[in-house]
Each structure stands twice: as structure tokens, then as C-alpha cells.
Image (cartoon, one colour):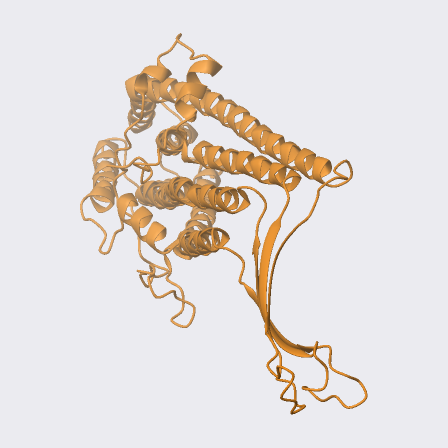
Length: 468
């Protein structure tokens, strides 16, 4: 290759710029086939989540228990012989010998049946809220994985875009150094080759990150095997190992944007007013209500438990044929009521009520802890979003443009024999890093918005990552 002379370097610069333009066209010109949007990924993941299916079955199980709890215990039927003589075991020998059939029915204490049914019904009412919370969490998780795949894919494209430019720089440095024309030094050649090698290493790392994130994403999108798939599951086969995500970032709507105005930090009480409608908190509310019903159920232990019984005793007629005696024997009918007396309550009933009260208070502390954790997480993510917005504005308004101008100026200085080759390489590397940093800021910003939207999920509308 003939080294371009000083007058030919502008032509070389034009060729390099053409190569850069071609790489840009490769990057943005043709969309990938089979690309999956974030909304599609969230929808498939939510429909393929076995936890949601299991939650529905758990709710059905506890609702069935609630129905059963409202029923009376089964009556007890007894059948037997009473007062058989032990010398002959004849049924008609003794007047008190009888064949006895009885039935008894127990009635639980106080309103135990209704309260137990109410307690189980309230426990079952928490599952729809838990499923809404799970869908919101799945949306956040899928958004994070999808955006990580997008980040790695776009970073690879940005580096591939500049790799052709660095290959041309290596060729120019090699030609200039071998012909001893210009001011190219051996260290310039080594530096250009080193940067190209480092780009190859960065590409390898990014390919690894993309493959790992894609595998994690595919875990959520893959349907269960046929023998394990529930009858009501609507699964997909999942994405293959080489299917790419969409080439454009989604537009994620930020819920309640007034909370993110700079200089207007919302108070914990204001944040808590929003979080009280969160499915995770509403689920705990149902558990608290169920625990209160459990306290009332424990208090029923102070009331007696009743049972009624009735029996019919059949007796054989007198076998002695005596006209002066009545040979007919009357049958017997018995009826009775039994109940227990909870007199010694200090060691049993009192302790059971105390246990129910303590359990209810423990669930209330769970709600308190959940609210505190969510408020702290919201404040953390809010601060992160505000800083990312500042950085994004700085990059878009100044930094990217200044990096591009610096790269063009260093290349122009080199082509006019007024700059070092190392400055050209350094400027191009800085520009590439700035574009990758801008991509990272945008991806991190969308991930933060998705996480913030989770805190405002409601039972009536759970966000699919907040995407549109």
C-alpha cells in the first residue's frame, strides 16, 4: 500500500469518513429480523409465569377450605347391643337387653364456623393482590433484562462501527511507517494496533454479557414442558439463542411526574399515601383483616361447645308364654344434651387469645416494614433518576458534540501535518467511550423509571414495565 503524501491526506480523511458513514448505515439502516419489543417480552413472561398459575390454585384451595369451614361437623351414628346377658347372650332373656341405634350432632362454639369461614375468605382475598404485585415485579425484571440485552447489542454495534475506522488507521500507520513518509513513529503504529486489539477484547466481553442477559431473559419467556404445563397455561416456546431485541429503546411513561421535580422533594407521608394502594400493601391488609378474625375466633373458645344426641333402643318381646302377663316389651327412646364448661381458661383460652393478638401485631409490623422499605427504595431511585437526567442533558447538549468536534479537529490537524497520530487515536477512543456512556445513561434511566413505576402499581392496572 502506498502511503498517502501530505497532499493526499485529505483524500484519506474522506475515505475514513466514508467508512464511518458506511458503518453508521449498517448500524441504523436495516432492522433486525425477529426483533422482540419490551412490551411483547413482558406479556409473554407474565403469561408464562408458573408462580401466577400456582397462586390461582392456592387461592382455589383456601376458598374451598372457607366453604368447608362454614359447615357443621358430620353427625355421628352409633349402632350396638346393650345389656346382653353374659351367661347365654340371648337377646330376649333379659328385659333390659336392647338393640340400640343413636345419632349425635356437635355444634361448634359460638360463632366459630362463621368466623373461621370469614378468616379463610380474607386469606384467600390476598392472592389477587399478590398476583398483581408479581406481575409488576415480573415487568420490572423483564425490563432490566431486555434493556441489558439492548445495551450490550448497541454497544457492540457502536464498537463495530468504529472498528473499521481503527483498522484503516492501523493500515495508514503501517504504510506511513514502512515507507518512512510523514511523521508516523513506531509507537504510533503500536498504539493503533493496541487500540484495535482492545476493541476486540471489549467486543468479546460485550458478546458474553449479551449472551448471559439473553439466556436470563429466555428463562422467563420459555414455556413449561408439556408434562409440566398447567391446563390453563398459555405459554410460548420462548426466544432462541440468537433472536435480537428491538433496535430502538421503548418509550416508558413516568408515573406521577410531579414527584420528580427538582427542588420539590416529596415527604415520606406523601409517598406513603401512594403506596397504600400498592398490591403488596393491600395483600398485607387482607392478612391483617384475617388475623383480626382469628382473634375473634380464639375468643370463641370461652364459649361452651354443645352437642345433642338421640337414640332408639329396640327390645325383644318376653319369650315366656304366660296369658296373665303382657309379653310385649316397650322400646326405649333417649334424648340428651352435652356441653363442656371452659372453666380453667388461664392456661389455654387466655393463651390462645394472646397468641392470636401477637400474630396480628406481627403482621402489622410486616406492613410497617414493607412501607418503610418501599419509601426508602423510592427515594433512592428518585435521586438516581434526577442525576441521570442531569447527565443525559449534559451529554445531549454539550459533551457528545464536543467529543465529535475534538475527534474531527485532531484528524484535521494530523492530515495537515500539525498533530500527532496518537491524538487522533485518543480522540476517537474518547468519542466512542462518550457514545457508549450516553447509551449507558439512557438505559440506566429507563431501568430506573421502570423501577419507580413499580411503586405506583395498582390492583386494577399493573404496568407492563410502564412501556408504551
